[in-house]
Image (cartoon, rainbow, N blue to C red; front, side, top):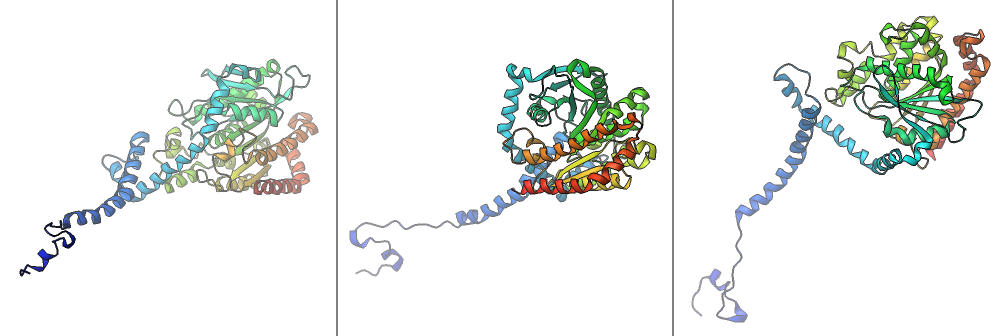
Length: 437
């Protein structure tokens, strides 16, 4: 055999002499590219995606409130980028409510359901609309008028509309055996928080003037609000109690409204605006949030904080406040549970009656969406808490209708608080047990 180079022999196909076997070639360049693709992919995921999400969110909702180029430096800080991206991605969980979304859309547009409610009633100085829902368990022509619930939706003071809560109002009317009103109000940028409070006060004025027409008890009203709506319920109550001139409602009329309000129920509410702003800063959403914009800047936070007004009310006006009921989910990351616990502690320290329900495994959205359909997980536990508090309200009404029977509201509530306190604790525990099932 000729003295062939060894490498050449290896290319000769021995089973088929005379054929050269093609030798595979290795490209060092392709190996380099393969090694580089993983770092590039990781870099895109960890850097490119968060920066893209964060910058788009800030471009849409607002850059940091810094002068000149400093706002872009603040916007590009790594901590802000990653915290804001996380907050944006957390909103993807709302996709689970897709079926509920189509349910309320369909229900609200179906004219056959108009027998359950009055749609698009105009009220107030700005010509807002409200929907009024009748209880299916009570006749519209009943001799005894139904109690009234006014539900104020949330939406970070910048979004929301009454049609979204049609199923909630419908179920609430049935569960509480009450007439339920769900009004719209001027959210930012159409108005600021003072305008929102005025709109809610106007809704209560409308209720005082139209109780007989729609057969509800204008002197037996409970306010229920969620998130920003809970804040507005509390703030409106405090403004009316203090007979604030900026409401542009006669002082006597404000007093009549407050005599009619038997309770305020807050679901995952915001009660100290500065505390909530600090929470927004931790989540890096303080500039994309509409809160500080709706309140005309940080300098107005005390004015729009229910905690601030409580500390500055006289004892006489504190005695006129209705009972507060606070419900809050322990897994709420939008409004931390401390918002309600601190507010409860303040109310207690000022001798204002308050009940606090902390609901395990309930988040910020579930506490309101689960009131829309009876097959939702937390529907019955949450309504159990609300129903029990309405039982107390009825008991208080029977003993003297607040201050009208010669008994002051403050002394009446103090008398009741001592007699039902242990029962409230027991019921609160019952609700927690139900949630654990």
